[in-house]
Amino acid sequence: MTMQRHIRTALFALAALAAWQGASAQHTLGFTVGYGMGNGRFQPQQEMRAIWGLYSGGLSWRYYGKQRFVGGFGIDLEFQQQGFSFATNASQVEEKKDYLYYTRHVNSVVLPIVWQPHFYMLRNHVRIYLEAAATFSYNISSTYENEQARANGSAGWKGDYPFKLARDNRWGYGLAGGGGIAFLIRRFELNFRVRYSFGYSDIVRNRNKYYDNNSDGAENPFWATPLRSPLDNLMISVGLNYRFNKQGFEAWKPRPKKEKNREVFKFGL
Image (cartoon, rainbow, N blue to C red; front, side, top):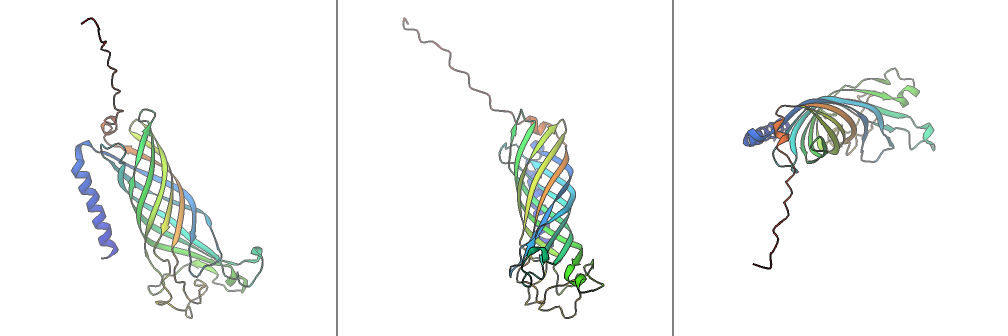
């Protein structure tokens, strides 16, 4: 089954769920912007460093049923930067200050399909939530910097990374988890969220499919592509969502306390 069919099936399932509970549902739509870091998990293991300064932004849709603690389901559509950086000469020098790094920044479109359990505080004005998501992505473009190539005098030590079908993966998938807090202000939600995305797909293909880089330039520092090369991301985001039917939240009221039995037993009867 192709990646497109997986995405269409997930969208259809969410649409059917929304139609099933319909009238009592709470729908929100908004946008998010984020800042964070990226890293890679390579096999064989490399001397890696995290890349800070990555950003993200996109749209967010959520659906909440009447169940108070089950939470919501939703979809995000985001532009997200990913990347990795590793020392190409780690085996040749003794101190980290002498490392020369190869760094890639990858621009991707990411589609997380999210489950969001939550609970309310302060008379339903604050919502604390967790997130679990399956993510699907497409890599639009990429840039690279190769410090070792620069040290060797190569003119092409940095620039736009050319994707090759035999070497590079455009499509990606993984899992994500996190949590946040939302402040409900009339018909709006102000969200603060932390999400960690754990990649399962590889950014470059297995060496059995693309063994060497004899025809490549400084953009490909691998003499043989790694066995595994998934990418991870940590994003801290802020978002603003609009609540389409406010009465959905107003239905979630604390269960009324039972009144004590005030009947007094009379011994004279």
